[in-house]
Length: 202
Image (cartoon, rainbow, N blue to C red; front, side, top):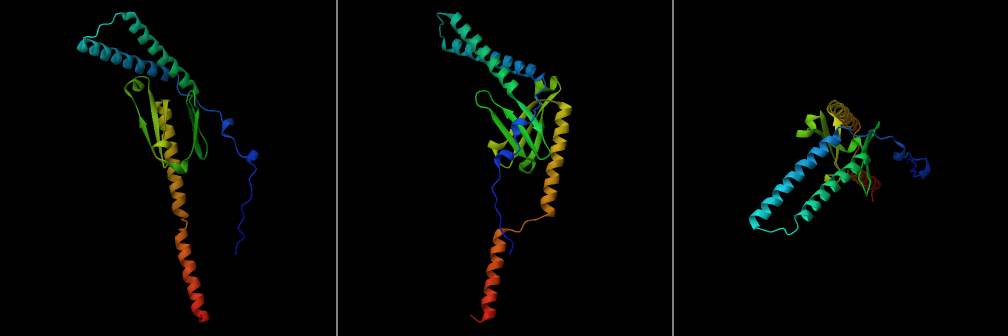
């Protein structure tokens, strides 16, 4: 019988993902964000105007409404400006790292074995600047899925192709080295034990 070993691991010797240099999204992605904000604010202004017109609401101090509107727009620009600076990604030999967030920073380290499929999306404004986003779906469900925006279209295609190769390689490796299901082992041991008892005559 093979000896079972479960030694402690020195956590100080574990590789630290924090030391990995992350790639930033394309600088042109900032223009895409500004265009999206402009469109959103335009629709927001039209919706507010229609609401006021239909309900015949009088604004005693219109400058307060306009000031609040401009302040909201500035907050959106600042919010996304900080967000784009915090984002970064890296592709290693066996996993993918993606970092995002503003107040709460989230760093996802996704092994290739957990990736199920990848899609490449091009929005209207992103296409104008030759950019795309990669949507990576994992076995962890929605909570484990990530989106890497602001990638040069050719780079996004190259990353998608490379990740697809890694996924296929992982699937091939698993297929060539199947692992026997634990319940099958248990059943075999049980049957073997029963045969031994019968041969002993007990």
